[in-house]
Image (cartoon, rainbow, N blue to C red; front, side, top):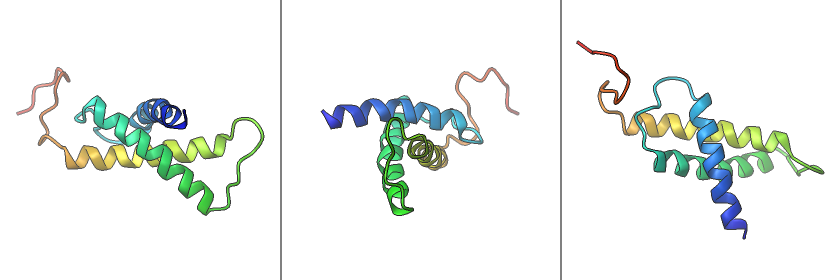
Length: 96
């Protein structure tokens, strides 16, 4: 059951990470955004624990903020690695 929770959290965190990531991150597909979100959740929890986070009663907002930040970093990395040379789908802008 925890795997399903990580996947669902990964979808949400991936989309939030994509939302807060600076720069052009519209060139990565949804499945890669979800993978970045899952990676952000897992990596964020490790980073949180490494800096002394031990959880709290109720929702641990700091851990989720760290997960979103990790996901945003992964989205930016994925965007650079899968960049399409300035050709943006659906942007409606003409590039000369």
